[in-house]
Image (cartoon, rainbow, N blue to C red):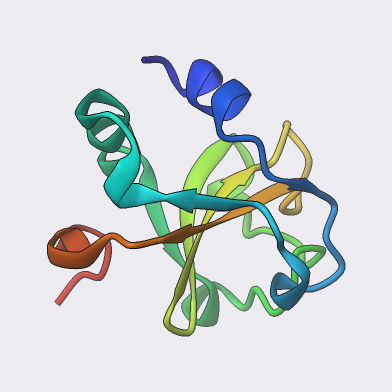
Amino acid sequence: MTYTAIYDYYQGDRKPSDFADVRSTIFFDTIPEADRAAFKMLDFVDAHNEGITNPFSDIAEVWADTQYFILQVGSELYFVDTQGYNYCRYVARIVNFKGELNLFFPM
């Protein structure tokens, strides 16, 4: 599945004002293996290290050309689609990634 197809299926909230406001949820343990594999190939961004404090924080230039990525905010994970903007335009929370946690949280 392409990232565009993933986004079309797992749409996030449009322009949430805060990560706590994100209502769209991706239940990682229930999605097909092919989709999980595609998620695992996305870039991983740590919000704290990149200075991202809310969805409208400017995304560092290094991530500006990356339309889709996984964002860690504290202990939460989010699927982000920037749509080419320099902020998190569409955001969905990722839950239930259980034993696959280490694939997202570098040790």
